[in-house]
Length: 329
Image 1 (cartoon, rainbow, N blue to C red):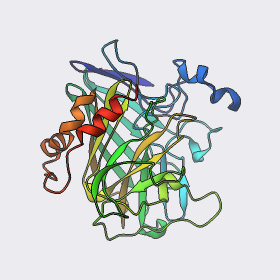
Image 2: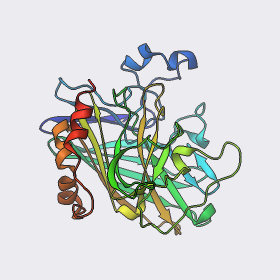
Image 3: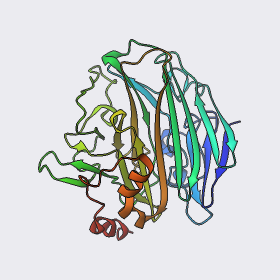
Image 4: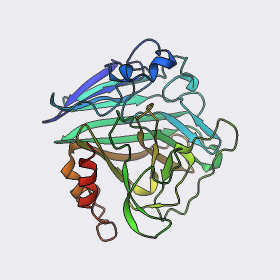
């Protein structure tokens, strides 16, 4: 089975494995054309949430060619590979072994089998538990212990479909001013992508030096310290937000044109330090797609979901920021 539909009271989603989609890629010049992005096509190798919508009124926030919560790449201190999507990480090769299965009318499981290079297996359960949100349970199992730099990471992009405001907003301690505020993710990225790591994380992960091995949206860590793993933005007139747990094992990362011109990637990474072969590591997240006004209570929702109260140090999303985003059209 290549895709499964799940539904809640309001929210509906389509979960796809790597085999779902067209048999071949469109030519590069047409791939960037707005007409192609607007079509309801999907490319093989883009697993995860291929469609997300509220009833029939609010359209999919993700680029139709690609997906949201895409298990895209494995990486360590030597470089990265697109092995979770295509055999040997080669887009021209066959889709990487994967399968999606229905668990209930509102939940599904996606399994990405281990490849030949990083040899990591991923399993994701998607469940619509509350109106306007999808809960995500992730299991990552490495089969090696010799990853360069003593760690292995998994990149999970969300390819957003032409938001008016391409910024996602993250709660950080500004490195220049020391102020804790909600900051646009691309304010200091110089157009190359940016990674946000919890501010009290002592670990500094090694980065590759070889040509073609380094990618800023994977390795370029911001000097701003992340206060909690939550971000939000606006698409299709609605709030799109993500929250993740545990905080010390995840990083937020962003790429201004990850899905093509005008289509940023609002992503996260799961990090495993000193992995042991066949030891499974668990992470969880919640994706919210609903009214923009929910942004004002985002930290309260994070506390209720994660059990972690950060309201003593992190300010709520300012009303002025919500109004600014709403007024951008």
